[in-house]
Length: 224
Image 1 (cartoon, rainbow, N blue to C red):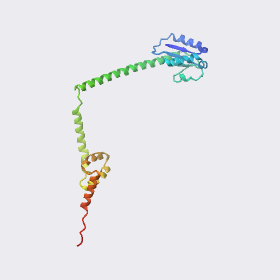
Image 2: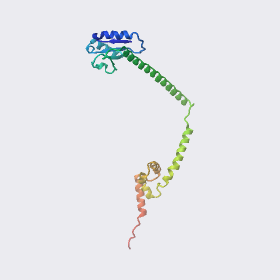
Image 3: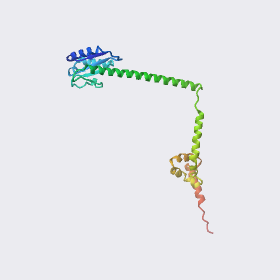
Image 4: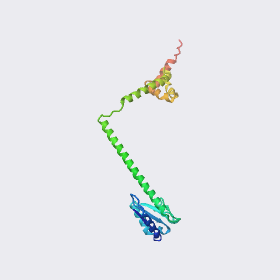
């Protein structure tokens, strides 16, 4: 439904618009209120009351500028139709047709999203049912194959490098943290993984240092 609100000074133009629009059929889901914005309408209580009622009823507001009066705050979120240079019947109809087309697209989008939501919901319920009843199982063989390929790549590309970095003596074990930090980013994670059997904690490291010192210091003979 299309309604028009205006000040008494703009009533003649409002009647002309109403007459022009009665000859056109619009398919609109919402009620529209055409607001003729002019200096007179700013202080017209009837116009302001109509705008307030439209907001409460969630009607669509269509401001139509008749002069250089700025849009009131209650209408500044709506795209105005500019008739400051004079009323044009074709422009009014095209503007309303665009609003109508926007509603058609909105309806279409709602239908599409609704259908997609229904399909996704049905697929989820079906998946839960099939997995819960053992009719569908996860591809464990594929996972095992992928793990085997990964292990083979590590053995081929990484372990040969680690062989030259792993500690071979007590002194190497003592300096192993520095060796780990100096290694490449790729090798560092694997080196840390091999360090569990090495003296990496504080007490073990101190013991290794003491053992190394005992092995390398030769006691001085006591003179007779």
